[in-house]
Image (cartoon, rainbow, N blue to C red):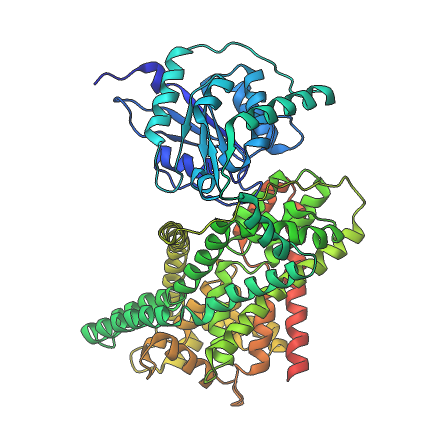
Length: 626
């Protein structure tokens, strides 16, 4: 089948409001795995990909930032408007409309019409429209907007082929662009007129069913979940349940992963014996990597819970709940998106601040994002909490885990409050968000998305852990003391041991020795490496336990200073937890902060101040508890 060069060189731009299903549609059209987050401002840069093949050729597809209008008041609107007006290869626009929010979103269609760019309308969330007693006359809508209208099922991919056919047809019918309005800064009277037209169209298209009133359920739930007091209580309870489940719900899966790596270490040790090669593979590679991979189920559950709340429509409400307290700290609900993203990873969270229009608010938000408990901290917290609550019920460790998450929010809030007092007043960033209908999440969809994000985490962290474990094991065996040397003598005489002894005085005020100090230093490569470092230093594969995690805990309990006193006590472990809660130990975050804020002074000040604060706090905690 022949390939049409016009189609091959043309781009279709997806435009729509946040929560409209635009990025999910982009994934269906291209087969890519762009991240979908269900709140405003989740996308600021444009994502590009090739559409699935249709009639032997394919279109380029551009996913633009989620916006409410093309009047450029912020970075998101500017990016989208420039993509539509400045990119010559953008031939057609696909306007993605949430079928439950037509009344407001048709205003965007009126602006696209003013640009005179050929467009196709994709209507999503039709399952919610029907479930809530509504019926949309899509033929009438097509007649009113004078463009093809296609119903799309974002969850199952229905209508994607028809949408591609419609977009392809529009490209062939309009090979060249006709210039339209370039300035969409309409006057108030023009805006009122266009909104009136949109409302008139909605009245002709949306038909209500007498059996159901769609807003009743919405109002009933929002009455409680958006209540000034009860809404906050519900928010804390929901988040507490999520974060505590990370600990106790993951236990069976963690045991399964632990058993797998333990068996692998035993097989390697039995096959190769006690020589250097066997020690390298069992204590170095298998035990070092396995000590972190054991905690992957907890990371999966974190992603699963967040996606579940996103898909249900609740997190959009959570953003409105925290808008008021954030405003007192100099922030707004817009900061909720990057702050919540920081619970997964600080790097994309910093990038997500681009849609914050107030420079002052963005300055504060970027500064406090590293306080949020990212997924890289989970392995460290899980290990240290297991040490503290050994023999206790899992729910106690779960409650403590919840406390750590809430504690990170409190510390971030205090830091934001201090910065809000120090910085000069600036323009406020007003917060606007459409609240989607509540929906019953599809378990298959949630599982698939959580699995993809977990795999992405493993791919990102795995190579770093592997390389560092390799370097650390070599450093712990050079110079080699011979087969007759005890493991402790070999470690102390090695390059790693000598380096550790040099830095040990800095960590003694925290109640830690050089081995724990090396773990903290190594965590600047990646926080997860702290666990791997202890696993390699303590040679946990040789421990007389039936799992790697139990072996590491045993080695930690038996670790002593030269005077015989234990290294890891309740006081020193609590100090470690406080240090990891506050410290900025991610050089990738520092790098992206430098780039996003265009200031190495800002990034350096953040790095130094957070780590200095973490060190002082950890020392104080240890001195008070001991």
